[in-house]
Image (tube, rainbow, N blue to C red; front, side, top):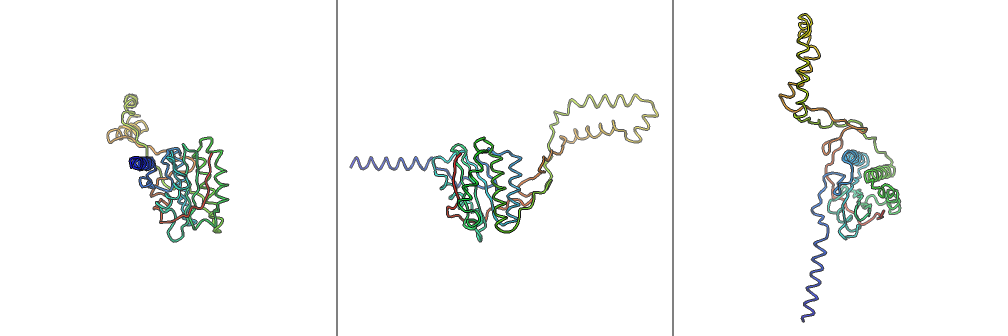
Amino acid sequence: MRRAASAQVLVLALLWGLCAWAIDLSALQPKGYVNDFAGVIDDQAELQIEQLCATIERDTGAQVAVVTLKSLEGEPIEDVANQLFRHWGIGKKETNEGVLLLLAIDDRRSRLEVGYGLEPYIPDGYAGSLLRELRPWLRAGDYTQAVTLAVRMLGDRIAQAKGTRVSPTPLHSVPRRPVRLPLAVLFPIIPVLLAMMIIGASYGARRRRLRYASGGPEDLLAGMLLGSMLSGPLRFPRASGPFGGYDAPGGFGGFGGFGGGDSGGGGASSSW
């Protein structure tokens, strides 16, 4: 009896340990098409990939989701991908046209989970070849390039199968938020402005009258900067970069949530 009880306690302890280390998928909530929980994708590139996924959905009806995790916590990547796919409902419920790219960084494992509706377009063989295409980038630690390449390949594949095309991403679709310059940074400029005003005031009466009448450049610049300092930090537009600005959600084709799609485990897994 004691041995049986001890065995039961051991089994329960092992089960509890497995549960304790298992991934809590309910805590993973999608914020967009791209969910970089491992923090390995460049922020600027993430916005560009997000916009590309939105364009793919608009032009083909399919939803492409990207997820990065630090670790699988001992779970098979196939189980994690399938459960996450179903938990989020990637793809529309009516068509099940969703696909999930999952990267487990510390485990060096990748998975392409394909929804029922996309299996004719993305068979297991093609899914495996796509993951092999990503290996050089993944081995180099360039996860941004790997994800970008994968999303573009998936978008082109789905569009071609449906007899359509993915529209080019428009430049400067949404202006970027301005960068706020702290007030403390402007303090060293004040003496320069004062010196400019004193020099301007030392000119002849005629030039001074003409300058004040026309609003000369020194006075205009001084007025703008001093007025900005009195009213708050200056704002300058942030450089948009080569692909233009994008703020998600709410930008060009912003993420509106997944639609209840399902997957039966189709796709492929790989390592790097």
